[in-house]
Length: 80
Image 1 (cartoon, rainbow, N blue to C red):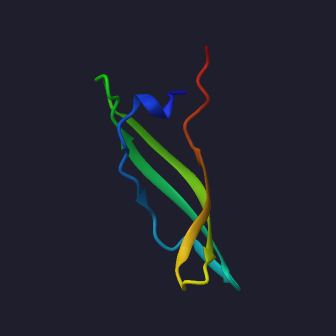
Image 2: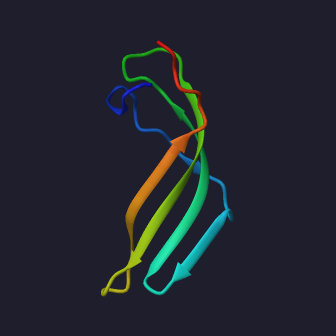
Image 3: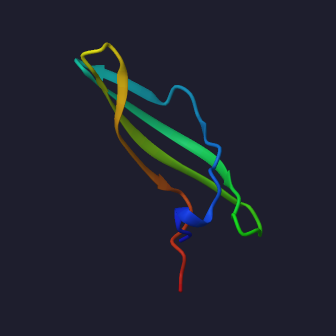
């Protein structure tokens, strides 16, 4: 696994319409992503796909703010 400190910021492309549920002041978004991550020190780009879950809270100032973001890659666990 590559630490996040060795990659440049990836560009995430979310697939639309997987699932979004609102329950009171909370919102739940299930998504999948694909990205291309380029090592800062050079080398081949790493293609990644995965799934995630965002949890939003509707604050008193009438804004939806991300409370949590959990994700996992579809890439296999590297062997040593």
